[in-house]
Amino acid sequence: MAPAASPPAATRARCSRGAARRRTPTQAALVAPDAAACAPAVDAARLGLARLALLERDLPGAAALLDQAAAGPERERLRAALASVARRPLDALAVLAGAGDDVHGRLLAADAHLALGDGRAALLALDGAPPPAELERPWRALRGRARLLQGDLDAAEVELDLLRRAPSRPPPRPRLVVLGATPLGASDLAALDAVLLTELALAREPLAPEVARAALARAPGSALARLALAALERRAGDLEAARAALVEAAALAPRDAQARVELARLEVARGALEAARGALDEALALDPGAPAARLERAELRLRLGDPGGAADDLRRCQGAVDPLRLRVLQARVAAASGDAAVAADRWLAALRLDPDDPRLLGEAARACAAAGRLEEADRLLARQVDSTPGDPAALLARARVLLDRDRPAPALEAATRAAAVAPSPEVHVTRALALLRLARVDEARQALDAAAAPGETAETLVARALLEVHGASPATRDACVAAARRLLDRTLALDLAAPLPPLLAREGRRHAEAGRPAAAEVAFRLALERDRRALEAHHGLVALLVARGEWAAARDAAGRLLAEHPEDPAGREALDLAERRMERR
Image 1 (cartoon, rainbow, N blue to C red):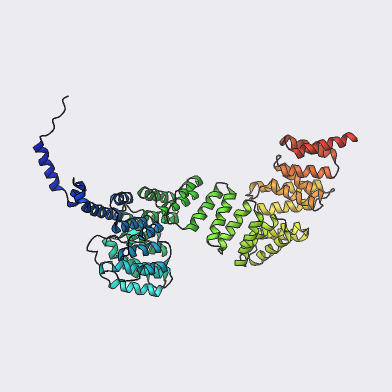
Image 2: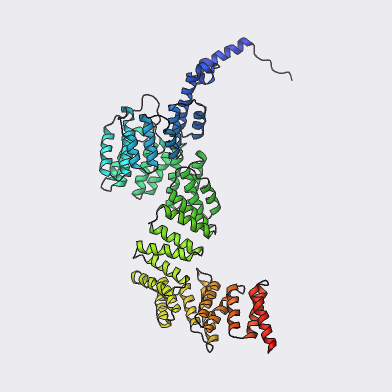
């Protein structure tokens, strides 16, 4: 087929002139052949398009336009606005440091400081000459939010009164204002008083929520007002109304990830986890770098049993996020992945951010205990008990760690204090175990009777079995084994937190060290009945039989040990010793 003939030159010229006439001045500047002559117009067009992209939440498009624009104060201010909208307030402040000092830059700086939780720095950024009338409303709103952040509700109410009197009109030329990492359009600027009134209503109960709700209803075109209304309805307990407001906000700002993040949080509160995941997926599709969405999805994935996905989101979580919450989530992900050592380190990192938080002290202590760092766990629990002396959970946790450290006397003291505040089966069982370690058998039996009053649990059954073990003697050994076995068999139908074989092996070692060989033997044999590979129980039983000079029994026990662990040196040494002693006989 012959190639199509190109149009004549005159036709091409007429088409070009027609296209040029149809172009807007901005489009003409962007495609003008004389780049040197049109450079200022091109830069102005790019900056204007970048503002529009930010208002539409097209962050990649805004970033590309700003990269193409020439350096200058206006471009730097827009770069700072982009960093704020992308939840990177530290980057925004770094850019503003070299962008010159004007009213718009101070507004952006104040917004960034508020995102970092620093109300004082926000007020300092807003000091100076008052803004022009068209920027007074966001200026007052930022001052009100800073006062709210400082807890000065009266001063925030004064700012609200002044905000109501400020002129409600958009700037005469397009300027981007960011408030709470949300770019403000004309409808949002008109809704600032309603938004601040809502935040005051949330902070101060005497303010009637109906007043704030009515004010927000007068700003139907504002996504910012819908977000504030959702917060108000959620505080009032009306989750359906809050959800409706968030759906409206998402519709008013179709490229805004924040509305979808808030919707996901609400869906989690409603128990609709799949809907929450869908909202977060949409938020990250709009803004893949949104740290708030990453953090929320990491927590949701953890709840849905996907620690690997949660860890991936946390690795990709960049920008301004709550560092404490980030560390807590990292710790929970590590624990769910079975890495107890990393979980303990992450909890300790979270604790360094708030050293006096009793909840963090308890979580860090539990993580250290799970990682086998009992002394460190004990120190943390001691601090938790000192900060909340009447907390029975903290006292019980410390009593159990003290038991694991073989310190029954202080464990009994802690458990007794917990029982005085809130007696429970767990507390009574812990007291019984401490009393058993101190050979106070009758008191231990009384504590177990109190523990069993609401009904037998796995813990009470195990403790009763340990009580039977404690009473074993050469004459009653077989009867004690039978009684303990019956009790332990009943735990199979119940939920048992600690594995039985290691627990029984440790109990046998303690009896051996305390000079109760019959009880130690019962404990070791019961452990091996539950797990014939239990190495600690094998070692304990062989050592016990060797110490008693029962060489035939020691040889048989060492043989069973080597059958399960052929390379074990202790088993080989015990077998050789038993055989030599039997040959001498």
